[in-house]
Image 1 (cartoon, rainbow, N blue to C red):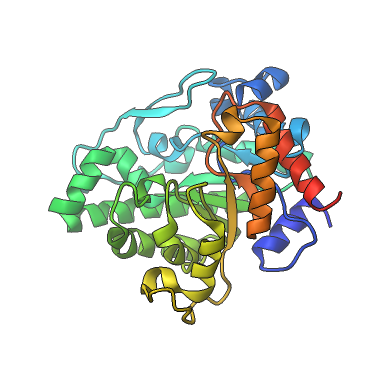
Image 2: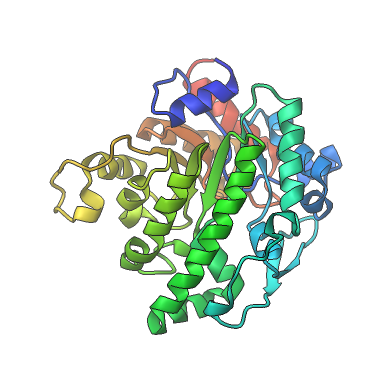
Length: 352
């Protein structure tokens, strides 16, 4: 079984002999930029460099996927936002947008031709041509987070309190943009789509708002994406794990704040949202999402030793993680040695 088959088998709910080790989140790091010559910010806007950097940790560290792009600003830029592409160790960020109010948000007619969307699509084609058996993962911005980029997160949160109907219309428009982009990615035959919704973290909005406002849109998006799909939400998502796992994503990506053993219990038993006092009740999930993660990017992979990385990887495997991955986007100054250590620890665990 090759690397692509192994990953897609896990995401299909099949048993495999060895857990994949991949990244569904940002993987551009300075050390690999320097080794490949594909350096930010050029790698954000040049398809060849994007493809080279996106596959660099496969080539240099044995990570079992290519993953592009390296930020969550592609869609906002294509909708008219001004984006600072940053520098060698600074990721892009939205500076301002043309939208003053929630009801101003609309998709431009040439959305898919705008900004860096064509760059990403071309980079996928380059990667597909170069690698037959390496899975290609593309990250897209979730509709709630995209709305936050277009309005400002503080304004989005304010709208949730003052004008819920208006902001829900805006989120629907953002959802339409996400669907258009996902369809374009399907046309270039991407293998896995990772929907990133960091603004939907329980650390930013109430879990009840996630359930009533964000979850239905994520479910609609999941139903629209034909490829294998993963949902990533930052922070401590323990209390919304069951909701994340019940809306049609093949995998959910979580940070180190999440207890994997408890998360698997919550998914299997449905106790997270039912608040059943620990009693295991049947869930309504036909095929539970696989759990992806959750090796710390803020500490272990960034500043930890090789032994720290290996210890954390083996604990995650002991806890039942389905797919090993960084817990969030890699910090640009993370060392390649620590990414290699992830792969080495997985191999040692399975006696490879």
